Length: 120
Figure: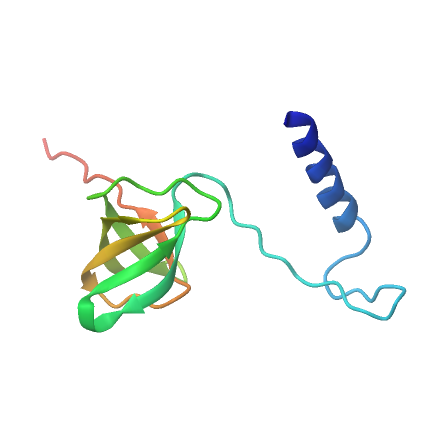
């Protein structure tokens, strides 16, 4: 299995070495810009918003979804815009999350809420 993963990575690197974004290829086409998200286990993206029911669907295609009940923060352009709570409805790469406060939109980044530092 590891051997196949190495071949996939080699193909990805070889494909990236053929030209930068927007560089025309020999057949007249244009290379597409591809965004690759980090696999840090904590990042998701809002796929769908059900404003009337106060829940969202969050995609974790490249990352591990948080456990049910986990508090999440929804960011838009690095600014927090909503607080979510991970739900119990799960599929292979998506979860539901209740909207606690704020107004999330499709495409917003979702991260696990960091615990508050204890006051001394």
